[in-house]
Length: 114
Image (cartoon, rainbow, N blue to C red; front, side):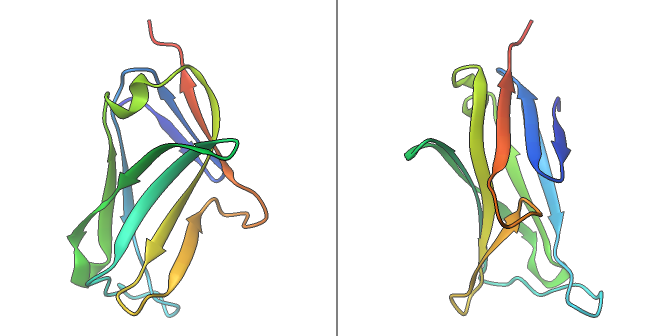
């Protein structure tokens, strides 16, 4: 898996795979039950949607999920895009969990492969 994730961006080489592993915690620090939730990585260029990658809830009672970015996803043009990750809980609540600074979108950058 070739990629780097920072507090406000994701960088991946074109044609590579990358997994974003997530562990949801409650306010008191314990595992958050995410049964029935969905997690999605959205990538846009301007107003146009480029990618929408659904995550997998791996162990809902432990709050574990993963978004698998595949070579098919990273075959898009080399460049810088905007992105965010949203979780929709079973009760319908929607939360943007990435980037950490909620006043802007994250960067999703595809770097030229070798």
